[in-house]
Image (cartoon, rainbow, N blue to C red; front, side, top):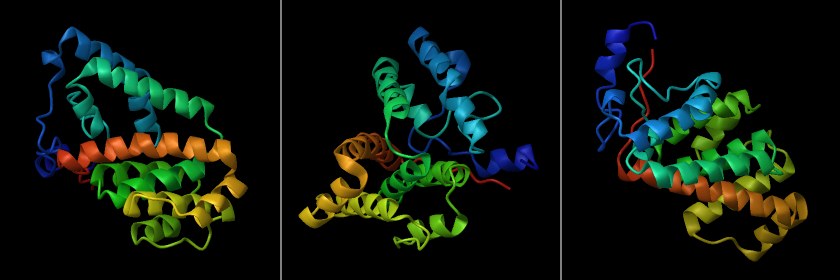
Length: 205
């Protein structure tokens, strides 16, 4: 950030409908969750060049929401961790799926964060811009295209037709489709949280 004061003034509502919580006000359960986030999610955000916490330690994005119910959130994060360790999907395909969910739900913070992660995972700017327009990217592999179409149809139409389902099974395998649904489910939940609480993406300079 070029100007800390300018950044703070432009981002005075990063909690959306939820007030950001100062770390000095954490309960023991919130402190335990914060330590869990500090071991994995916050370093992962830094590595991928998106903002998950402010200079004063307050958490933004879905992480601020998670502090409201630390024990349930901790179990959710265990699911996310298990999925990441055991998935059969490539990092690039995972980001295509996540972006398709976030864009479909108009979850600004999700799209902001996973645009950054997508670029680190091998997606080009042109690919990501195509996703944001709801279009197929010309550089997708065949299985990536099917994964995108599967996710987009499920998010927008609440179904997956038989032809597309068969393509997914043939190209990605049944195990891959199962892993897709774990990932889609996680980010449907996250996108619903961000949308319901009107959580914005930070403004950067």
